[in-house]
Length: 152
Image: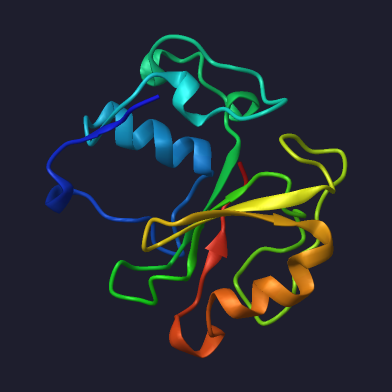
């Protein structure tokens, strides 16, 4: 599924105080024509596939496989997480030195592992058993400011 980003200079990543969810932010990007995608762009395994436009009122968190990290910037470390799959434990609300837990009841991957997309654009699957060793290598908490991981 492809995406078209229009006028990348006219929008920014959400700040820590963004007053909504990851789904709200994605709807904002599509409604304001910064990102041209259909609803199925945001789904993943075992996540309800949306159909049609994102901005027609039918796209909800049930169709969104992602949580966005508010507060990271394109000027920060390229390895800092920008998107994480929504099965990240809800109690993990900001990037810190702690290794996150996984919610076994949440799609797309439950407690099997986590997908991380970094600010630099790379993506990786991290199996649950590898989280304690891989997560700390992604970024140095001292190199990024305050963050907030938005709910899906």
